[in-house]
Length: 239
Ligand SMILES: [Zn+2]
Image 1 (tube, rainbow, N blue to C red):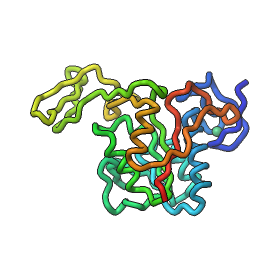
Image 2: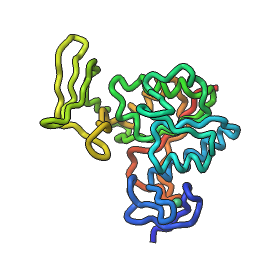
Image 3: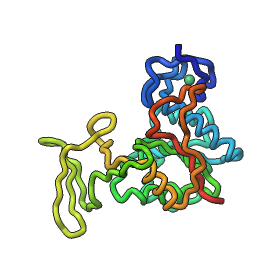
């Protein structure tokens, strides 16, 4: 049996299925291994910011939003691109600048139109000095190449018929059309724009001004077990 202490529900429990990032769910709270790593990181963020007044979720999924609400109550608000409360992480409203003690941004940064660095700067800007970002993103290992799937374009459009294509114009005015698209969680708005490597993700964070506190590794006792890629990160905006 795959016993562990779940950092999400904080109970001794077992995993259903093999240990994998998006599987091995906790029998009690149904968290996946990745969600347990995020839960562990959120609890660490809480210790680092014991007086957190505002916690912002960047398009958190249902499980994550429920967990963060349990942890922070009404100090947590989940923000979305398309619905209230709104947040465009590439260009956050000035009213959100320096407003959050903790920000969670999970499985979002691979879906940002290039250049991706704008989103990292956006995250940095909405945090208060000393604030903590909890991040999860698919990435390959250190030493692997960063794969940017598309160039920087304007007037971009995702066409689904007759087959999914990503189109737009590069700064030289040329029209481009890309097929062979990769979607996460089905067709739609979750187009994958890039695959970070551990190195390129680290560089994006550091270039935006973040200090990396920890890249969470496997932790069998807490049911956090998968390959050495696509980890959960804790980063801080320097005080
Ligand atoms: Zn659990």
